[in-house]
Image 1 (cartoon, helix red, strand yellow):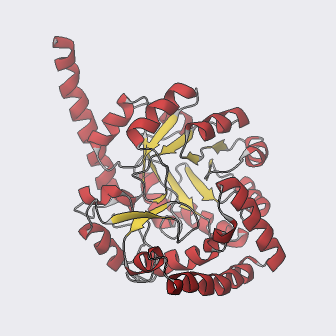
Image 2 (cartoon, rainbow, N blue to C red):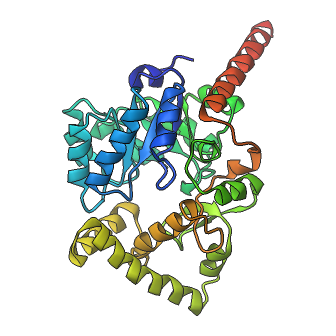
Image 3 (cartoon, one colour):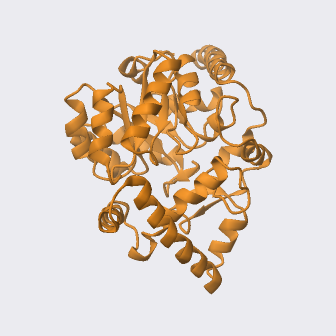
Length: 355
């Protein structure tokens, strides 16, 4: 199972854990890295001091490589990068936007850049800017989602760039890993599958909701974060998707105090928060009236993943939930995926040669 991505990252297996906000906490990150994959710390909602503490917690649990996922338009992004450089984080992970500033700052310290992207043009841009690899995420994935399915987006991206590509969106087992390798990827990234592990700190009630859900129970909505985002269809999503006046007022009035809370938590002025929102609007091609959703969404995701609110919290979840029926340890999961993939490759290679 050696691939370009395992050699580049210094990991044993070509399996990466998505840097999910409020879900990818130190116990999960360390468990993935200890099992031979790459764990990625979800730091979107953290401040620099929080990040430094979380990195220390990860290091207390593992001496293996790991990454940090953060928002390129975080109000304190430069300070976040300072912490990552100071703490010698091996991998920088972030989403859509212009990463040139991030790449220029991190590469000098030897940090590898592995952005998560949802289109061929963004992968080309990331390669031009100096990214070391990219995670390409299809529309099946939970959270912010592409318009294109993984089976179409992945081979097109592999053909368009020379940097190693990791496949995300719809993966949970050895069959998926083999399929991704066949499409030209160097590994897979999983989010929903890693939430349903014992080491993940997501509320047990939310794990049960994921486990009970099938592939038809997720929905893509732009009414929570302001951008296309896939999650479980619950009372909150149905209310916001009705487009009734009441739903609009709910999102508006919840966004205002949420924005104020975010400003206090990040220690920034309302004007700096507004400037951050404007940058996000341009980078993510958002309508101006949806910028406020960004602050609203953080509180709703936290309400679900940390506090277990299944009704009025937002639960990012991929369609692959319909294929998951257990909650193993991370080590058991990764070993099972690798064993399945090796068995499949051993089975199909001779049969192909015999044709």
